Image: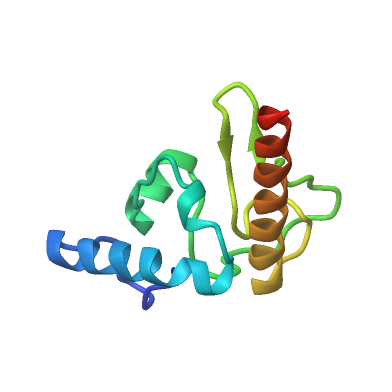
Length: 116
């Protein structure tokens, strides 16, 4: 979710409102996704910066030639990452959408493997 430039932290009420908004609307964008969420945690832009040493601003920097974005899935931590900072390699909003679709597909395939 994007916030205006300079907004890097939310108070408790605004954080709860944003979390609920995302949960209320995620199935409209990714039908069937909500029941697959086993853990959720809202990370503010400030927390994101602290955790990953990356700016969450839209296209904060141009990726240098040869840079390889990390994969959407970390098998050691069993975490799927989505957004413009992970694969596929692009530098625009479509990359964030594509990474979300890619992660959703990986989760779906993983779920099918677990069931069989």
